[in-house]
Length: 348
Image (cartoon, rainbow, N blue to C red; front, side, top):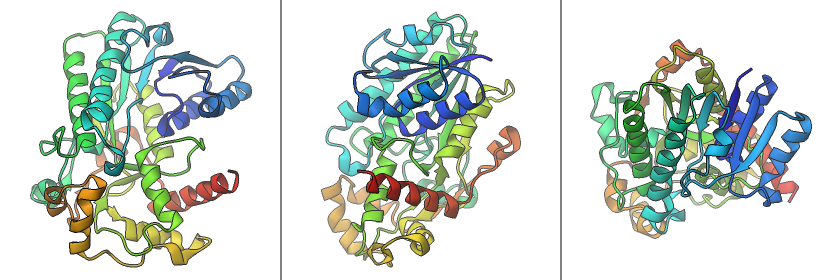
């Protein structure tokens, strides 16, 4: 079995990737910012106990050059997953919080790959955010459908900096890859990632958004925004498949449905199993309220005008055809997410 590096080992997606790799008998190296943070590292320590001698932890920092070299030594495959995912309301400084870590981290990891002769493949977690910034751009495209050929040309460091960070990080990865011919690069572009977390300490922006809905913070209504969604377990499965499939190449749109979904539709799916369904939204917020509130949660009026009420299609056929992906239903994804959330909340 190959030895595999997974960056950002305490992260939402990375933990699922590590778990699957270990279940399949891989030797796994993973990076964390500090092994002394026992709370964040607890799920990794548990996996070490469950799979003795198969999981090694290394400290590394996306902004510290060369810090991934030790973790990468002797690895055949690198899954680069570490990158911030922040919702607009969480972002105070787009350049410092999103763009610099994503770009510097990509360069840092891939320059280390250039120095590690055993690595033959890099699997990069990007995002649909690298493919489009405004739903209206896709709505006006052929069949109003997002495909692997699309690139986000709408976002910038001041206009949706998280999306912009994904664009420039992925473009930089392809640029570094093109400058050499020893290792190959495959990029996964998942939608909004939901599903059960393996850690009570995850700070993913997608979890922040859906947890707010479960708690009742959206009981007055939800903005009419539509998202491509995918189960975190399916994103992990895509990573594993790409890592073991030499024929995989280019970009893969990783989404659980060819439709996009609103928070209201996700609320309707979880309502039958929610312990207190009255706290879930039952209607869309009036547009004027969304426009008034947007700037207070980091969302510009310009962005809202090009996204509010705009539904697009998503083409996941390439991942199904070439990777053999069989996606979980959106309903099972959101219900499993909710049950895991309840268990986590009751355990606090």
